[in-house]
Amino acid sequence: MNTAMLRAVRVAPDGTYRPLTVPRDGEARRAALSAAVGGAPEYARYGRFGRGAVCAVVHETGRGDGLPSNWLATGFVARVRGGPLPYCLYGPVVLLGYDPHTRQLADLGDEDRATVEQLAVRRSAPGAPHPPQGGPTTADERTVPRPSLRPRKT
Image (cartoon, rainbow, N blue to C red; front, side, top):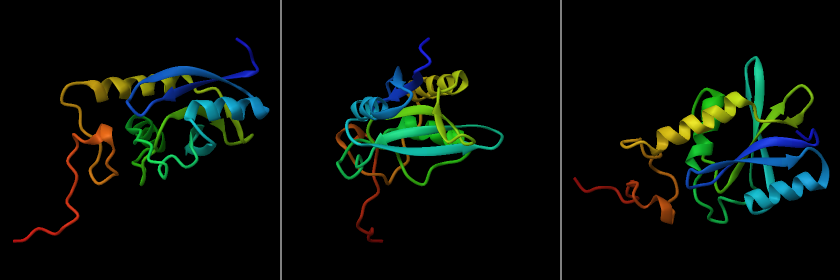
């Protein structure tokens, strides 16, 4: 394996994912991540006590641009954090490892790659729970009931 490349996973909003390799350093990495998320990359790092962290690379203005929610990537980050996120990730997301001691991106570990796969299988199973209510509605989320903005008459 070329040591100048990082192993990552690209998670699409529809719940599909695929392995991805990105250059380790420089402008080539930024260009590869920009192509993978469809715009300027924004890096969000999520740590774990006593273990390596992960970095979720998202489209910088994805939510504002109306990109769809990415429930698989959001669920993965929640699992890493040990609790739910107070927000959702939008659009394609690239998941990488992150070393908080050196502040460098790293390969996404095999355990984390397996977790993405487990969550994807669970979400596609019959009877799998829907995403939480109250988030923005996009064309691919129309099957999820949304709360009414108007108070009910009683």
